[in-house]
Amino acid sequence: MTETFSGSFTQQEPIPDEAIEAALAVLRHGRLHRYNLAKGELGETALLEQEFAAQTGARYCLAVASGGYALATALRAVGVKPGDAVLTNAFTLAPVPGAIASVGARPVFVGVTESLTIDLDDLAAKAGAARVLMLSHMRGHLCDMDRLMQICDAAGITVIEDCAHTMGAAWNGVASGRQGAVGCYSCQTYKHVNSGEGGLLVTDDEEIAARAVMLSGSYMLYERHLAAPGPEVFERIKYHTPNISGRMDNLRAAILRPQLRALSTQVARWNERYQRIEAGLRGTPGLTVIERPEAETYVGSSIQFLLLDWAADKVQEALRRCAARGVELKWFGTPEPVGFTSRYDSWRYAESAPMPASDRVLAGIIDMRVPLTFSLEDCDLIARIIRAEVGAVWQNG
Ligand SMILES: Cc1ncc(COP(=O)(O)O)c(C=O)c1O
Image: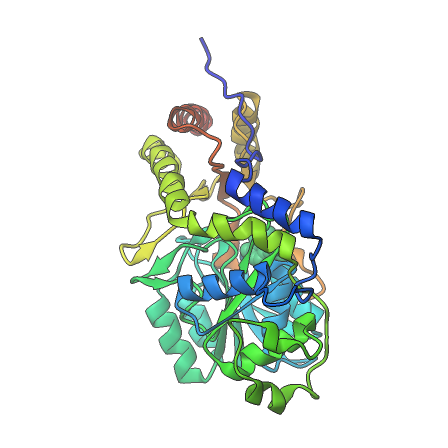
């Protein structure tokens, strides 16, 4: 009998009861705006920032409306101006080059390796082209962060980390988002904590933090923050920093705080599932598993593999066959994007020269979400289906 999978690749777990209770409390008192506080009240949003700063070891934290908003705010806060070049990954998701474009700057794309991380040789070659790198840890893969920081420090490049897929991850024990000048995270439903929409920004730099707070729409209420610099820092910047509203609200913050407390438990659950799928895929003819470096602590909320140098019609056939058995795979390399864009040549508002080595990798990247609603047995079944269908297409050549 042919096995099929009937689960949903987009169904996340319900919001935990503790978070629902906290959300109801906010709804009952009605003070949803972050600066709408009763006497003596600290507020869910300020507490969320304080807790996330402590969790990541950052001096400052700001909660905002989305991950993409955090990225654009970081660019403004480090001083990127219209017309400036900003280095970024050729392989990432549309909000990353979109954040660069939103401030009128120009993305300069850096290639991708077979490890699905930024090509550090290409970065070194292009280091003179910009003074800011927006580094995307796309799909949770961390590059050699020590070498990346050496390249950037030597070239005087400020690094903004896009940690949309690496909340809870680390490189050599350092939390993702803490090597660069700014770390940006997403709290959108498909990420590692879920408030529908939402973002977090961390930094140790007091002026970047103060500018980010003003940019997010603090009016002159910055003293109501618990993870922001002192008023003397705001005095230096407050009349020169525009308000580009994008605040977090107390309702979403209330939902997020219990989820952040459970993050390490959730990471362990994701990785159990990831490792079951990875083990099941290993040795499939024609399929390359992405090896994870020892220095990397990852969060297996999605899994990728390569069908390297496969003809496009064969990739499509393998995906079709998996889909017919209920396994939903995404082909990041598809020449005509469907539902999302993830490669540099899809963002035609930005100039780019062809990158043949990256194109070869991009053409073979297959991606699959691993929601926590999957059981370990589901993961075994999914791996068996992919193994059988990819193997069959490969063998029929
Ligand atoms: C790699 C990456 N960066 C940034 C973002 C932006 O996050 P948000 O959806 O919270 O704006 C996403 C969202 O999908 C993403 O996948």
